[in-house]
Length: 330
Image 1 (cartoon, rainbow, N blue to C red):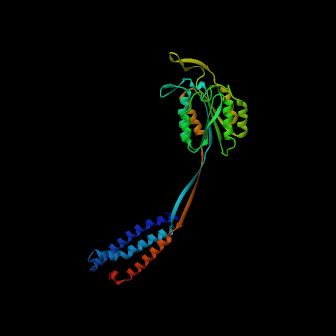
Image 2: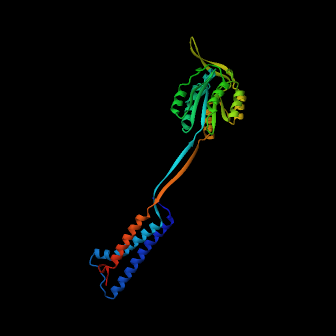
Image 3: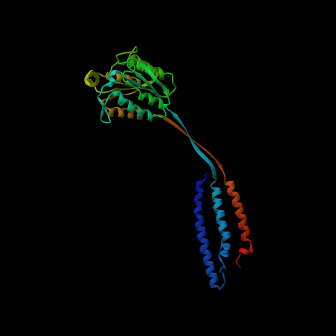
């Protein structure tokens, strides 16, 4: 319940003042009559209450009139939220270089892909209003999951990503082309491709430069992330005497990744450690926020008529009692 003229309720404060004045004057009258030797005592509590009842009813009537003037209303308010989510495609490099053991997770050395999987899971769980898609690339690029709100499916696919699942080379241009193809015809206000790689473009039929031009024309924003350290990094290989660590030279084409991001309106990030990668995804999460439109609706009807009928009934009772000899003191 609400009141259309809630300011009127302030007049309720007058009622206690009127009650105090009434009883003060009543006590003064009784004192004067007592000095005049007139018997004004009541035989019992019932007589005392009966004597004051008309006034109490009058005060209750005043209270109801104030409530009526404040226009009580019954109904409900409710809000309607519309979520204008983003369309985000995640492009994950699963080439052989992602098996480099130059990162740590829970104080244990792990490969780059393993760290990326953990951080992607956290990112996906935060984007509950957005449609997400997943593609993997190595020598080829393939869509693992089209854009969907079924984030459980995305998380399951991320857990099962493996090194070399689509070849050992790195087709950055092809990965961009697949993501662009999936995003280009959508009506989303913002279409985003997050490209994660640790190498250089060494495979594929489409160059990153051509794919960048396509993204520019179609208004697709690309965030690029260069993962891992450069130079000699450790890899684990199997030998006849068991697994051994060897070092191999790795180079990341940072200039290419920075150019892709700059030309498409995204950003380029460098993640040398797992902590860097966490901060990057936290930053992207803050930059690309889902818009929420909230509309509030009110549905109220006046119900002062109910109080009006009660007030009229009280007025009638008060008039009857005030004019009945039973409640008069001579």
